[in-house]
Image (tube, rainbow, N blue to C red; front, side):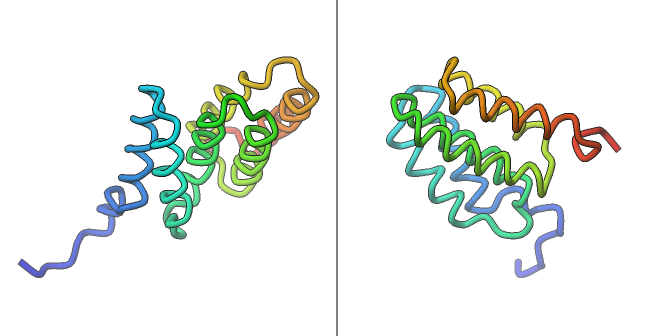
Length: 126
């Protein structure tokens, strides 16, 4: 059967499958496997996956709970992605991963960016 796939079938591309596999590995505490899958997902996101970028970056931040600099770097990138392509799920994942930083300077900076971002009209439902 060589019929073209419907346009809505983009949900199950390899990038999305690596995103799901990475999140599954993350939820069971396998940070190395999660980071590998999520890095593959991030590197293969195409234009149709723009909103997913913030989710993948926030999940990548969560794979490095003992490296505050890496967590902050990924979360800043996730917020940059949210500035371009707002996605509630991405914002939720950023907030979840941000908790890793506690009351640090990096955490406070992320809080300010999140507050500014969520106060913008872009974050409001259409």
